[in-house]
Image (cartoon, rainbow over all chains, first blue to last red; front, side, top):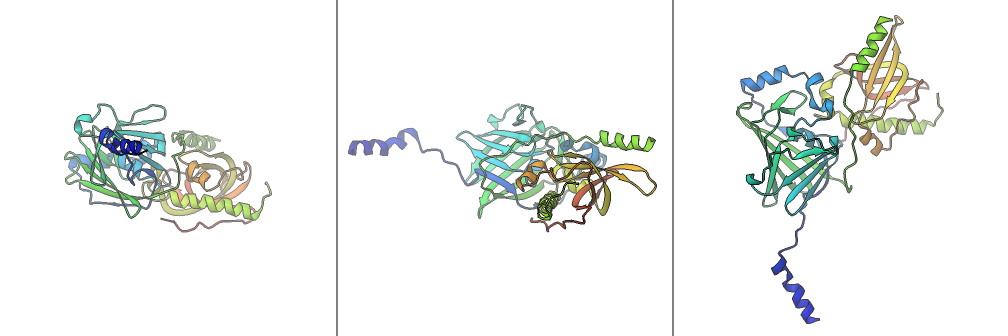
Length: 228
Length: 132
């Protein structure tokens, strides 16, 4: 018996400490409107914003994520974070998005987008990401974005030059995210968004099965009605 | 029209109204807050179609105006997922029934974001304040 106890007591020295998740893991819901820093756009950023028509150009209309922060900041849609030994898995209920983020440094950055939906469609609007910890804070850095919108209500853009940093930590039982967007082609100063999330007692996200917005049939319906 | 209890109607509308309120914050799916104005209006009509989907459940109302002109209104509400979690189905919204929909006027013509529905018997629901 003493021999068995001895063997088990030295196991960690051979196999390393067991992997354990932090309080970041779990299922979360957006907990309020959040905050944003002053938006100072370059002339190019202003041009993109002025050209934006939210009734036509919002990627959400085609069940496409407009940006990382846009997907986090969706009321009533669950988000599940799972920390693994070598990666972070984030499941977003909105649009059935699944984001696989390797832990490490920029060398682990993939050429492919980190996010896909359940049909396997990739979404470069969410960029390619890698993650690391600074103490209890999980840092996610994303690059190689497709053009998109950080704020779909106002057409605040992102571009392939955009670098996005997500700092994720748990404070007083709440998950806090600070998004920092840097893109000298679009912003005179970094854009910073902050959101908080409350933990819910759910095991997973649910299947969303997004339906593309289609108002053409409706417009045609009233046009037919007019012609009667 | 299907005869069901006042309590059931109020529960249904409580959940629909709550779902509508919870969805009207910041950049909710397809920027709900930006797609609909602050103007409140009411439209009476006959339910022609009900869609219980993500990201927005919707009701199509056929409205006849004072000049006898037939116009269709698209009344949008919260996501199916959110409504289902609140115990809401749309089975009580019966095709062919006459209701009055009240909500925020949309930036697209003849669209609205639902705040309440009033049935022919006068049953109505006034939404609770936003939780967030």
